[in-house]
Amino acid sequence: MQISEKIFKAVEFFKKKDLWAKIAFTIIFLSYLFLIRSCHNPVEGDTFPIYEYGDKNLKQCELDGKKLFLERENLNDSFWYDFFVGSEHLYVWHLQYQDDDNIKKNILTYKFAPRGGIGAVVQGTSIGIDERQDSIVIIYGAEPLEGFTIEPGPFSDKVVIQDAHHPRGVDTAHCFMRWSN
Image (tube, rainbow, N blue to C red; front, side):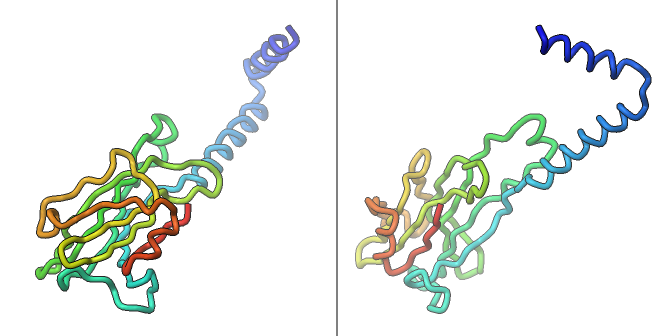
C-alpha cells in the first residue's frame, strides 16, 4: 500500500507544471541513455592472419602455398535497434585462404552465441591447423553452435575436424590461433 501511495504522489508531482522536476527527469533519463550508449560495443568484422605456432614473429601459415586467415563477420547493429528491439545475432567466423588472385575464400565456417556481461570477450574457439600428406586436420578448443560447415573448394575433401579435448590442445598444431574467453 505504501508503494502505490508513493507512486501516486510521484505521478501527481509530475502532473503539476513544475518545470524543474521535468527538467531533472529529462536530464536523468538522457544521462541513463548516454551511459548505456557508451557501453554499447558493436562487434566490428576483422581478419586475423594465422601464424606458425601462434607466434606473430614467425611466418604466416600456408596450405599449398596459400596464406591462411581467420575472419570474423561484422555485427555492427545500431545502438537504437539493440536498445529497443534487442539483438540475438551469432558471431560468425570463417577460416580462409588467399587464392592466386588475392581473393579470400572460405575453407570452413562456424558460429558462436554472444557472451554478455562486464568484461565479455568476443566468443570464438581456439583453432589449430596441421597439414598432413593426405589431409588437413583442423583442431578446435570449444564446440561451436551447429558444428563446422566445410565450404566447397580445393581443400574440402581433405579437411578432418578434431576436438582438442582441452582448450590448450590446439597448441600442439603447427599453425594455431588461441582465443582466451
